[in-house]
Length: 85
Image: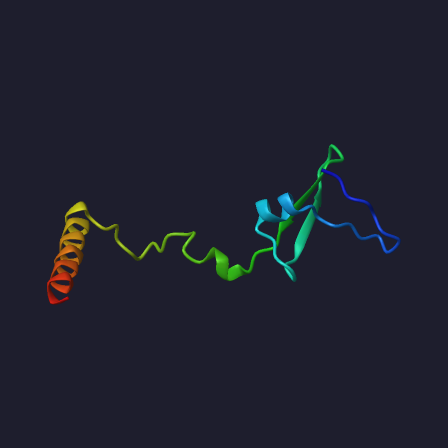
């Protein structure tokens, strides 16, 4: 894929690249120049997008038994709702 540079120094990012990066109008991108001379373009994501990436050390892991109980409780609720209809 290629794109031409305008007189203002702007280039259009081809649609397949925009789709791949999830870019929409108004989004910002960041450019990185690597030591080998290659350039990488990445979307800038809001810091809120990182929520949940790092585990909270205060939270204990959920046990298999707790997961099983939650699944059964959810299945029971779904069953009760389907009986009402």
